Image (cartoon, rainbow, N blue to C red):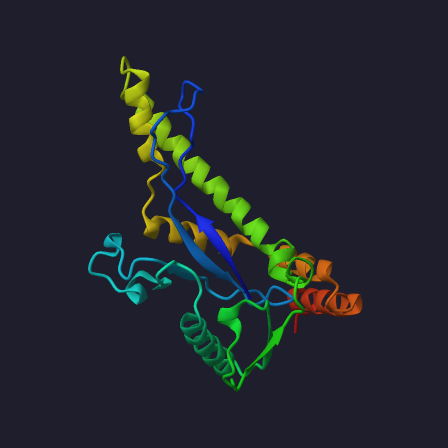
Length: 239
């Protein structure tokens, strides 16, 4: 399990005229996302989002449960010990319901330093300064996920820009720039929907390759997992 910053509303600092625009306020909104996937890619835990607002306006009168998202808030929009404990409780309950006992790999960030005991989750902290090398989520899972997020965001902006340009024939460049700024002003709910959508698209192969790259588990374990997966998808003999 690891956290990553997700800046979903960041506008360009240049204008359509390719020059820097003096006094333009940079629009930048972000969330913290937790990323968790096991070694064979069979369990990709639903994303947890941490923002700064208790109940964003775009939620309307709906609860996070009704919206189907795991969202919470903190003063700076970062992971906290309280939030981490709550998430661990949820994760432990999920593992217990599946009758699974798991080892959760974590970095040494202070919010992760909890002393609570969990019946079905054991915490293991990676050595200092090894996260980039040994944390599977950092070994490519997060990068693959965020690359897909960037694509869906860019496609969204391009589609809106095309629609806008069809309506501004004869409008000056400055007016176009002002309208273009709003292209990046995506609601937090839309941003979370994008993330949920793209997280589901991260393949088992990507997850397995990233875990394998860390060298945490022996190569023959992955060979065994591959053989078991082949058996599970093999056609059953006719009776």
